[in-house]
Image: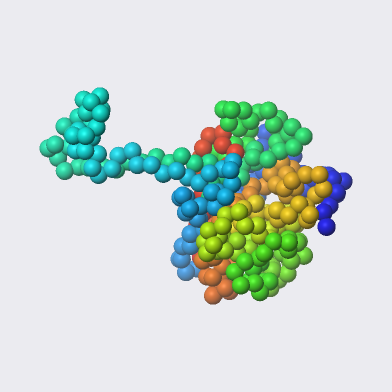
Length: 332
């Protein structure tokens, strides 16, 4: 059952962190990641295994299902045959300029190279939402004006502002799909509640501590890899989980699905869209990680019974960006 806007506003007042770390703060709950927390995270490494949590950035990614974001376009600008081919077959102006210079350079030495470019939305696959990504009532996190995000980018709360923390902390996997006894996927219509998160924590015999990054396994990415359907909905966190994250001083939360939160409007807040995004990014200052590939990590945790790890997940430092790609790793 959907909540009301009155319910939403009460929770917003409850979880809002504006001013908690000063009026100039632009990194929010990443402030919970202290030097001691980073050392604690490093101490979780016991066997030296490295597990990638990032999906592929390519033409078959999940964003192909959405019109306003497209999959990455990867193009070669220089490849192995360019030096000789362009001189012989390229247009006259090119043969007289770039290709001729290249050919002359390559003529008497063995060095060759390839080069490429990529064109993509910054939130095309595994990524972090910056605190400037979502806002309401003309305010970003910590009360910064929404108008400070212009065609030049985000002046406040851009993704590059998290550089000081690097998003390196103790990570905790909460394997919801395994807890539910599902095969590989939590289908839509079953939002993950705070009570269920408590059940998973207890079942896994793990503790959520201040400064942790909580990583939620719903099985969506594994399902996508099997079907290729990037538009298929699945279960996510109920919007009331924002209070659960706030109470435990979680530094950030990531999941293997599109939105982290449950997309079903019938389970959200009447009169708005993605209420957990609004509460986490705008009110709490808590970043969201989306489209993480958690299948291999879930398998490893199930095998050894250890659900904590060192998480290293710095986003690409794009100045003024409201989100950025990441290739996170878990170290156990």
